[in-house]
Length: 318
Image 1 (cartoon, helix red, strand yellow):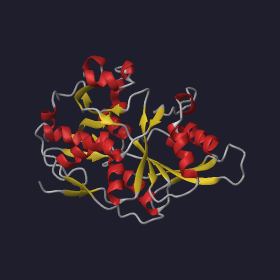
Image 2 (spheres, rainbow, N blue to C red):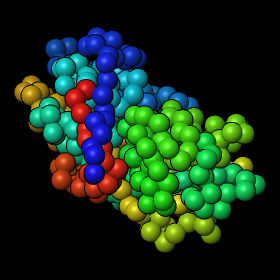
Image 3 (cartoon, rainbow, N blue to C red):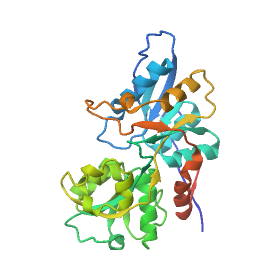
Image 4 (tube, rainbow, N blue to C red):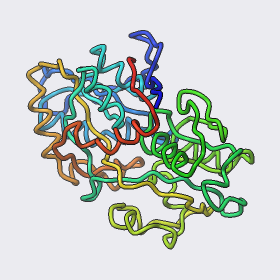
């Protein structure tokens, strides 16, 4: 199979589209080391910096550092920020962990878990009143996806479409053959499906659409691992589930491989020892979606590498 280079960016260092924020050291020290933490823009309707405040507060209190946070414009910019030294730690996608390891620029500091589950899912959904009953019915239609590098919002949906017999062409960095694709973020993909007639399906992380999918449509593997299963079908409009992926290892926290600061070990220890009460503020407007971080390595993402290989993609230089 011809391999297609993926994960490319022409952005220059210093023009990564970063939105800055500073939490500030909360441990009382005036000479604490600054740690640059870059976040991924997974959903446009979520203030991700506000969402991560409990984690930043925990790291500052336990590791005695000052966290400065930035939001990247996309997943490729996350890797470029780590590779260029603009970031020390990152909220990242599994594909970024794979390419960062390939480039020798990042390590997996930990893998996030949500209420005990270290797996999550990709969904392809459609409106209940659409005349779409299977993935095969999407031939010739328009499908909305999340970021092109998103594991659950792009790579796994494309893989499921390919397995259903649709020609994905040069997607996600080029045009598919058997359908039209639009890439944005998880919430935008969902809302585009709901509000725009040409879009007949959305490929997103299950976390973005499960509240619209009736619980009766969820396969057993989703019910086993997904902590949001009890909320399934609780929101309108109803979305019908066309396909759920196999379980995907949850997203990593990455660290710049050449970050040799004294704070590195303390941050890692604080991250891996964080408990649910440290991370989740039930009164927060934007509640953090994960409840802990487990030890892990890039080898945990072999299922993602398999999908990348099946699609004929080769993760390229950023």
